Amino acid sequence: MNFCPGCGKELEKDKDFCLDCAPIMPLHSKNVHISVCHFCRRCFYGNKWVKTSSLENAVKNVVKNNIKERKRIEIHPNLPDIEYRKDNKIKFDIEVVRGEDLFKIPGEINIDICDFCKKRAGDYFEGILQLRNTDKEIFDYIDGFLNKHKIYVSKKQKVGKDFDLYVSDKRKIQNLGHNLVKTFGGELKINPKLHTRDNQKSKDVFRVNVFYKGPDYKKNDVVVVKDKIIKIKKMGKILSGIDIKTDKRVSIPIKNNEIKRIKKRKTRISKVNPQLEVLDPETFDSVVVETSLKKFTVNEKVKVVQHKGRTYIV
Image 1: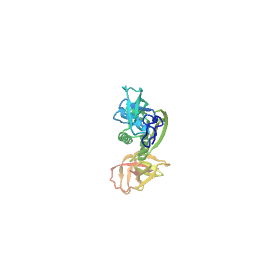
Image 2: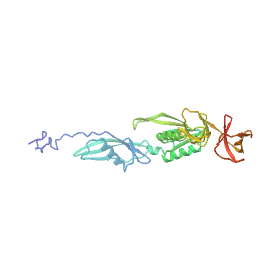
Image 3: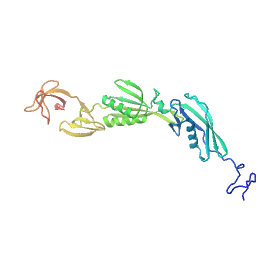
Image 4: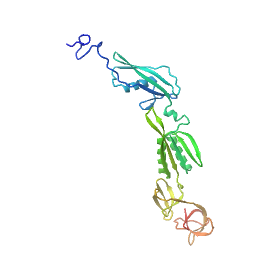
């Protein structure tokens, strides 16, 4: 038979103390810190902003995540009336009941603006998309990407004929930059810059400059690459098109290759026999056209390019 060493009462089997004399085991828990968005009432805990049915439930979730002893636990946050004013800090306590033991945990609420509402707040931005030498087709692609991924533009600054876009998502605009090069070719530079220190998340906050310069040519332009004259059909890291001299499809890597655009000019067919000729767009002399597999009629309108003294119909 066992007896309580504190008061001598008879104990149940496998008990060391009676309920009155049993020592109180400490409750191991961190202080509770929660940020609440004063716009949408999202709460920041677990290292992210989350929607919650109430601030009280958010506090309970934080306490549950902090303590190990979850059996026979009751949590009662003593929340005061809260003024949802930016940078307001409210201290309170949380009562935690474990069996017959009562503990109090300090808590603090910080009124802030969540990441979601910052993006809609007007001047918030995480990165700058610097666009140079872009045309309507590239702009339409960018607009579609921004709308699809819900990226907000807080400011559009004109730089000469080009633009800088101040955007809300630094990761996705890096993806956009890579997509632009993959789709249209061009030049891409990504430069992260330290902006501030987020004490809430204990990490540095970076903003990113994404510089994209479009190529000097576009789809359906005619270019010279490695002495080949190519009418562009598809752009990206690989330039694909039709070799004007052979009328065959070719694909050439853009990297490490000099690509020069040739201006297309309008003119008319001047002769079809004994050989195909057109009017020179500058001198208006009748000049021989290099090999063409198509048939034409005299006075028919065509477009030509000229390279190294030779004329080609495109």
